[in-house]
Amino acid sequence: MVSALPSMVCGLLLGGGVWLMLTSVLDRRKNTTTPGRPALRRRFTGANVRTTSLTLLVAALISVALGFISGIPGLGLVAGITAVAVPWMMRRSVANRRARQLNEEWPSVIDALVAALRAGGTVTGAMAALASSSRGVVAQGARDFMIAVSTTSDVSSSLTLVKESWDSAVGDRIIETLRLASECGGVGSMHGLIALARDVRRESGVRAEVRARAAWIRVAAIVGAVAPWIAVDVLGTRPEGREAYGTPAGTLVLIAGYAVTVVAYLLVNRIAQPATDVRVLA
Image (tube, rainbow, N blue to C red):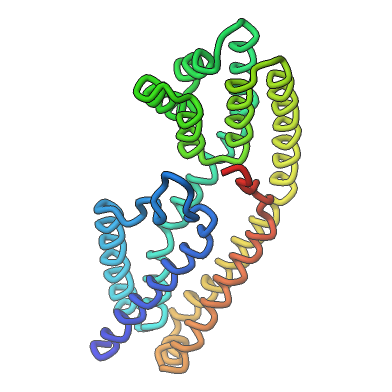
């Protein structure tokens, strides 16, 4: 077991690198360069480096501890790689939940803007009202707009800052409509916002229905990913199982099986995930 420790640690670091590269590939759309935004989106800040280092340390401890306890180095390696992936999965789950909440909030945001414009207010006044009546990312974007307008008096460039803050395809459409209302005026812009709110509500309903129907696919993916490893744990409690999986060939089988499990799980979740809007107006 002591001789297997270096290979376990090296394998863990390799698995962590694979997961980081996979995260970069899955988030490539969010990392595209847009005006006024750094190319890496401040991904590698000091806090992120510390979090990544702590995650790798905890994963290494879990890998070594489980490898010694079970007598199966490959099982400890798999557990360490999973420990590296858990924080990424949690962050991605939180980001998806926030994105769904933001999509559900857009119709009420548009209604608030329409109400402010119908009352005879300007785009600046409508954004000021939005900053005080909304919350979260929407309110932050509206506050950024007010600060930029008070500093530069340039409504168009300030609206561009809001687009960067919201980082949403629907938000881009709202901002471009407000830009048209600010530069050209007229009731057509208001009608465009009303039509946009209607379309967003319809799209939100369709996405909710798709997610509800695909829920069983995600549950099946979780069960299919976890069940084989429960069987491996059970087999590892028997002497012949520890002897088989403790060999280099057994370690290779565990690593290959883990890779297949991860790829299959990501593919099934990708199939069950509704298509995301592309920011064509970014």
